[in-house]
Length: 112
Image (cartoon, rainbow, N blue to C red):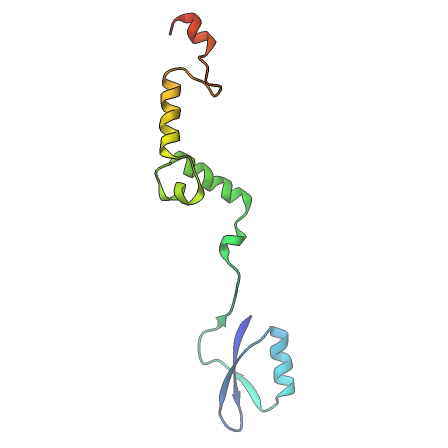
């Protein structure tokens, strides 16, 4: 909600109020001795975290980046693969192990 500044016309006293837009109108109607003044840049009060507003597609892209760069700080934060897992996968691929942990049959048949 925005913060509004109001000045008392008779005394010159300035007060700040956190109100909705409709609440500002109600305050001005109920207090004819006050007028709205702009003494500083507009201020907003919010309790919304940007982290909670990230959609699933963006999260998925961040996870893909983290998997591609397992030693980065992003991988630590997002939960990408660990360096040990990446190195194990490289060794397994080099020696012909698939995801099931068995040699590929065609490589065995051709003597690779």
